[in-house]
Every structure is written in structure tokens, then in C-alpha cells.
Length: 156
Image (cartoon, rainbow, N blue to C red; front, side, top):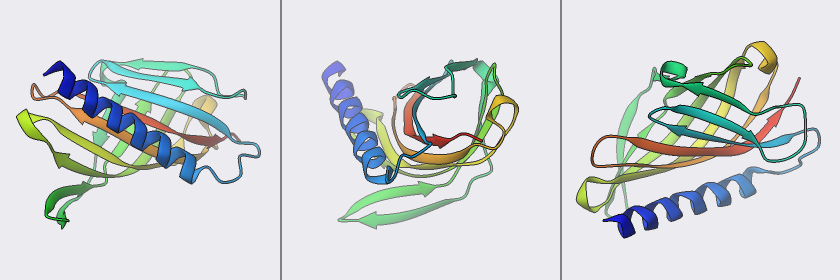
């Protein structure tokens, strides 16, 4: 089972990397970041130099709400598409994003997703931020979800 989880996680990270590279475009004045989200909170990590600093939030610092769900089939595979609003409240302020993600069930109760995210508003040190990128994650049979969001933020 550990091998399956490692394989799923590796595929999810590869999808994030490919999505982030594809959406990068011009990086003038943009800072590349990674946001790791788990059941215990989030960690924002700058991947390139710039004004955005590392930040964390624990527990209820990560909130998902306000989404719609629809189901499609691609190549015979059922996919759940949803668009949750994600709110990250850290020590330096709050970032609110809109995500568009597609979930696919895999054997033994696991599911994986890939998608995109875009900043819709921010407060504190993040006020005026724009940007977005790619996302990927895995949901474990016990209900925990681990996700990684990578992309570019354009500071104010």
C-alpha cells in the first residue's frame, strides 16, 4: 500500500510541476511559490527570491467552501469536477483562491486530483496579490487529503 501511495503522490507532484511550467509565461515581477496543504494546516514557501516570505497556518487556517460539483467521463473514466474557494489564513495575512479541480478515484479507496488555482483576494501583507498556478493532491482512504499548489504570485 505504501508503494501505491508513493506512486500516486509522485504522479500528483509531476502533474503540478507540468501545470506550473505550462502556465508560467513571463515571470517578470512574479515570484514562484509552493503551498503545501494537509489536514494540519498549510505551509507557503517562496521558490524564488522576492517580497513574499514563508508563512504557515495551522488547523482552521485552511478553509474550503462555496463550490459546485459536476461529473464528466473522459476515456471511460468518471471525473468529479469542482471549484472550491480556498482560504489560507497565515501569520502575514489571508489569501483567498478559486480552484478548478478534477478528482479521479483509484483502487483501494484513494483518489487523486489535478487542477488550477487563482487568487481572488488577499489581505495583510498579501493585499493586492494576483496570480495562480497548478495543483495536485491525493485523498487517502482514511479521509485525509494532502495537496500541493505551485505557481506564481505577483506582489502589489
